[in-house]
Amino acid sequence: MTETRVPTPTLERLATYLRVLLDAREAGVQTLSSRDIERLSGISAAQFRKDLSYFGEFGKPGVGYSTQQLIECIERILHLDREQPMLLVGAGNLGAALVGYPNFRAHRFRIAAVFDNNFVKIGRPFGDLIIEDIARLKEVNAKIGAQIAIIAVPASAAQGVAEQLVDAGIRAILNFAPTSLKVPPWVYVRNVSFLQELAVLSYYLAQEPGPLHDGLKEKISSDSSRHLLLTPRTKETSDAV
Image (tube, rainbow, N blue to C red; front, side, top):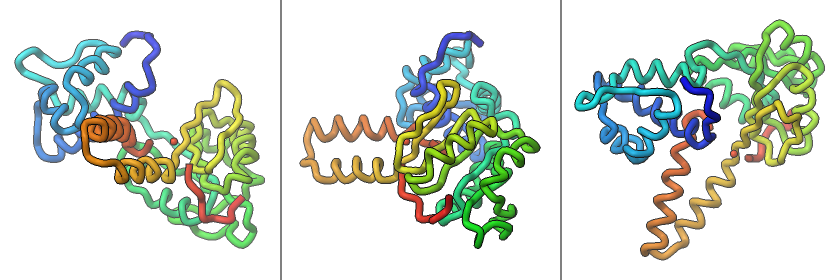
């Protein structure tokens, strides 16, 4: 594998390819061509081959790609071949949905602890976990060793939570709060906005059919393919933190 810096859109598309490959494996498909990937993912065969080229040579001419081998390769590239514990801050409705999200475990992500500052909630069960006091975040993570955290709190609390997470050793944050976070350069943040996605859909619904509309629709379809799990702000219904 080369050390070339890989563009973020390429990594996002890798997640889409992985979803397609996992579905194909589930259906008993052992080999796929780049054209099959294009048909199933909506991403061109040329783009697929270009994305893979960042990481070496894959597949055999005239044969295609082994579904299982390509799954294993992409999982290694994305570091999805190992369990990754995560912290969740915000024990509200969104937090409850995230704790119960089955695809996390399917891709070896595990919410290892959930935190809140609401004393009514602290100590209560939350899925398979017990809600921890946000004041104990650093102490708890010293035992867990998580590097990824999810913020599911109101915008007014998000920056303070982010600072606590960074202080606790978190290096990557999935932020559902409708605000931009200020973090050190070594901390990576991905923002998730349901409103942003709905606003874009609303815009396209209002357009008259035509070449411009079709072109924009195709672009959005391509852009949206990046959201596997995962994958930039929504209002959290919890009063947590």
